[in-house]
Image 1 (cartoon, rainbow, N blue to C red):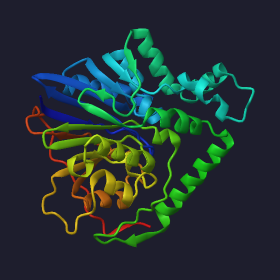
Image 2: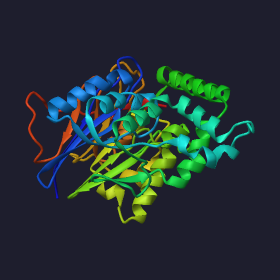
Image 3: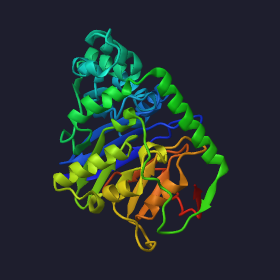
Length: 360
């Protein structure tokens, strides 16, 4: 029986680039269990370790989960692996599937070995995690839909989709990939400074056709149910994976819209990861009127100096669905269930309002 849970979001990102580092502790049958879900950048690993040692009073982590191989999620976990004692490392190892996906590429000169080497080089932070775990005898498992990590169930990605659809998309032409990301960043910059529109309750400025990278879509989406409460972690997942997670949960008899009481807002609150339809499937439809005292919570990691994280249109979408939204922006934030240990010096959180103007 799970008696309490604490979910800590640490303030990753000293400049404008946001990252994720989440430390979780729950008490089950009188014993504490600790999970780390992403570790921020490599420079942030030491702070994450210090946080676990000081606030969880332990140097043992039962589960380390790398949601996806981007450096702002995987980088800091290396220090966790090399400093703390870890029970299990849950991560994807795309280089293990080179023999299954090599024929998807135009370069017929590639061998299984050269493709695997390329994947390791392109995802160096994740590969370093694997090597550190192997050197220390830490059990490595790959998280796919239906797997259980402590009290959390993996909702996405499914194994076949990950191997045959997502990994091949990691390896687009470097020139094309660079051009696409540059164009997207430029578009975000223009939108961030040029155009705001009036917002009103019941109407959302969230396009349905948004796309994110295959790496982001490979994010491990987790859900845990504790009594009447449900806890959802999303990494940098986009609409395809969020829909897949909602569908998988429904097939397992889990009605996420009525079960989720705590949610991680995907990808630092960016607009390329959520849509109205997807949020309706994941956490429910917008409410007709503003609730007086919302009981649900949504947390979002955003660097203190990130000018466009989180998007007001995205936080409004969660507020309109009955969530109180909290962002890091250079601060540690924690969600504590009833029965969780008290923490001296921690005060109440500041919640995001429903903004009257949002990005167009």
